[in-house]
Length: 351
Image: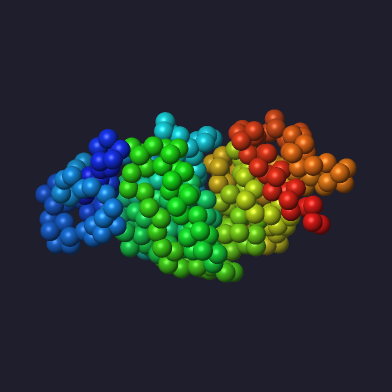
């Protein structure tokens, strides 16, 4: 198989270059790929800020993400339980896709363009059905920065009603910080993309013989959280409303997160849900028991924070012990718990 790529370079960074996939030109051989390019020349305007060293060319298909079929037509890639760096190139997030009778839906897109490209190849290796939508479960860059590949393939980009503003406010910071963490060799070509459809309550997507239900939630992990249900298989994509192994990251409201977890493990979702794909870890857990560790952490975080406030402690001394009993249960605990304690303390001191 062959695909179309464009070589982008950063001259200011020592002539660092990377082949960027142009989706939709896959073909069995080079001649057919080139013929497709002649029929429909690609739009190269998204790459205007880069130096293009070579014309668009057709090359053998590149790296695809490793995915597992966890239920019929439901595929998941498990990211590493690590912080983004130049070695892992930001592969630290769970991604998924669901294949229906007439189309495919991707769920989250990774930390950089290369991950969206690798997910596209994983999809194309399993079906030639069109990718109709990519659902971004929340605003954090490890979930959204690969989406431009899908948008350029014609997919609708779906997010919470608050996501467009959240990404606009954070765009420059996200791109600069991930470029620094991953390095230009792995991050080159990465951009944010327009959210073309927003959800303020519930949205159903038809894939032909199956539908996915998207729920928008109040402020919890973030202010932009979505979940995705596939009633046909009982698989529930929770995004970062459920963490496993990887220490949770609170960027919203501890009280809101507790309430949303109560809602989604109680009457807020179909009783047909039997498996959950967390945003990190897993990659698939039994539902609703798969949320038990997450609930325990948030309950401990809230209880310890309230106790510290009641005892008159200052934030600087309280963050050293808030939720410390949870440390054995989570990786990357020291990187995330102090931040969570800070957010929780700031919220709960005004109760």
